[in-house]
Image (cartoon, helix red, strand yellow):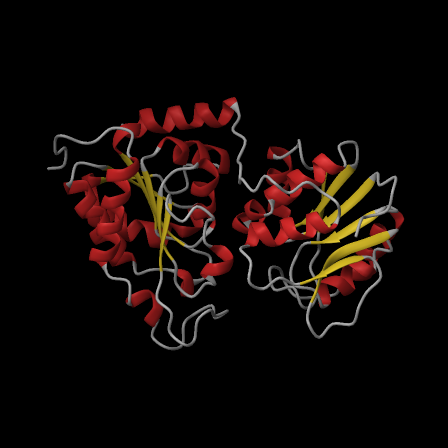
Length: 358
């Protein structure tokens, strides 16, 4: 099942957030290897211009998806959909690849772009479509799933590594942050309490207890998060006081990735930062609440330890858990702390011999 010959203009539909985009990097790399001279366009969310700029060796352009009914990542309205699809048709793509999800409404959207051929996934109850479509492989991790599609398109998919290219600017940002906050790479642990959905968040007070114990072990704690997560991060930062540096809102994506790359451990929810840690090969402890761990857990299960409980309601798509959040509360502080210490003993670049905390 191969795409059309003489493929020079490729559109990829994946209008999702950072973690979702990082998971498809191996597929993008395989596609670029198969079509080194093609002009590859990402149809994505507005924030993804930074992603396209960073992965300029894989992607050439971003076209911002204006949103539509059935796509909850943005305001659900078809107000701009007709004009958008007309514009996409005018671009005369040779190949349009639906990498947004399992099929259905996403395939309907991509079909309106009138590319010479289309590719993507189809759901079990979906009618067959012309082009290069494969059944949605529900039992595969996210990077492997999209590599399966690339394999169907004739791409070499042997390389499943995540990657985040770092620039001199990213490394300079890391240096400035470490100098400003007095951070030492050999003692640094990053703690990330945020996640886009409240249902994906382990309780902040439990993160606080873990961070406090690790600080008392002699590790240096830095709290990370975007400016929009200040309400969450300020609670743990206030509780820890001088035991932690609060980096909330101080990092760009590249600067954060560079910081992750020199840290000894990341402790976080199942969110974008867990994929950053996987890409930078920094050991992590991931507390996964509500999510589908088969789909979203990092592929290296030793370097990245996922802690999860599986009540009958899991996996879920709830924004707020209506059942009292049993999957999150089942993971206790001692379990996370023991796993963090195990990871540090196994992977830390230099063991601690003294206690630095007060």
